Amino acid sequence: MTIVAIIAGVLLAGAAVLTGYRVLCGPSTLDRVVGVDSLVAITASGLAVWAAYSNDATVLPGIVALALVGFLGSAAVSRFRVRDDR
Image (tube, rainbow, N blue to C red; front, side, top):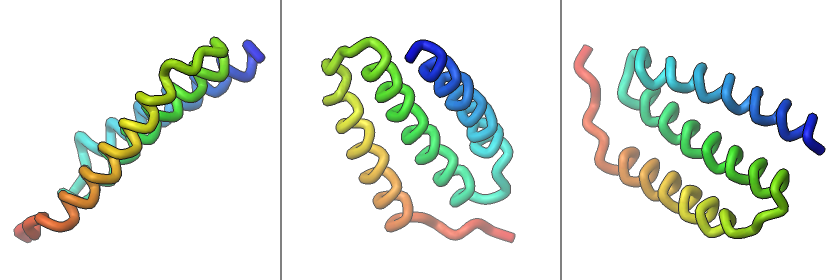
């Protein structure tokens, strides 16, 4: 189980780095919004890996809260977004 948790953590860290690059260098606002939403999902996945590794269920409300914040944030930005000038 330890090896699986380490591999999952390394893969999630790599995904976070690549997604952070997309957030910083995205050509449009929607690219940045998708990147931030992906970072929230990666963070929730990291918490889930930690919960499985440590057999600690106290982080599960945090995972649910992150999922709700990610969904509401994406819905709000897509609703009130202003078009980028070209």
